[in-house]
Length: 65
Image (cartoon, rainbow, N blue to C red; front, side, top):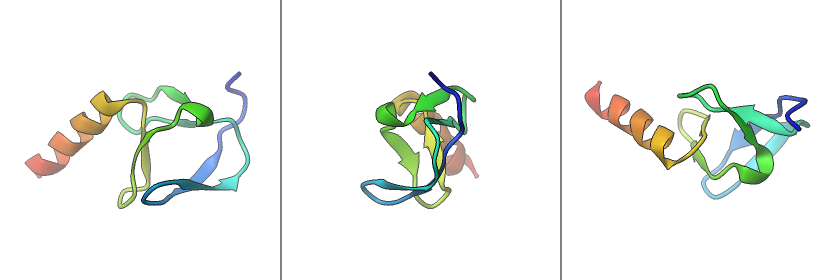
């Protein structure tokens, strides 16, 4: 299922595939995310998040800096 890491450019409401693949890796948890299930990312940091939980963790980390 998760065979090749994709390289993406994260946009405001979508993402652009720069290098073909079937998954990306969550910047917080390290979990693999199937591109069909990718819903959370940060455009400014160009990072993907497994779920709203990891996105919230990252948001809290950024607030603390």
